Amino acid sequence: MQYEEFIESVGERAGIGYLEAESATGTVLNTLAGFLVDSEGLDLSEQLPKGVAEHLRQRPPERSEFFSVEDFVQQVGEDEGIGPDKAETRSRAVLVVLQQAVSGGEMDDVRRQFPSEFDRLFEG
Image 1: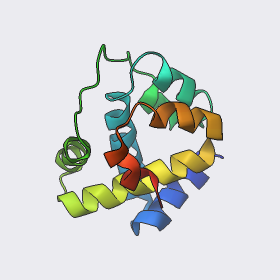
Image 2: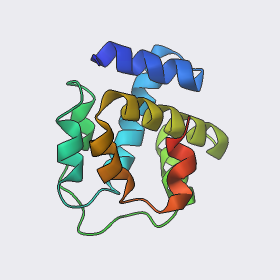
Image 3: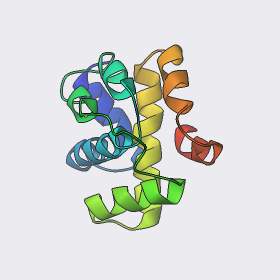
Image 4: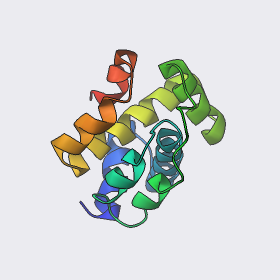
């Protein structure tokens, strides 16, 4: 999947324009990177297009920064300056497109790091 296709897919799923989709993608993936431990963010980034992958190439935290799906959505909302409903919609859009862009095995590795309450963000 190419960068433009990724962003356009996020925009379509979230019902937002290209620039908002670009911003949401960066915000959600930066937030995701704060959750992923070990080298999982780096492993995931290797399957993504340039421009998307960079958001996951951070030094992994020693332990996850988030404890609940509400924490995740709240952080996205604060960073984007939007309410929780929009933050959840945009988070879901980015994470569903992310699943389409990488291998199933890689997403299995990612999802293992999340409690089951996060399933609603990964399901389109």
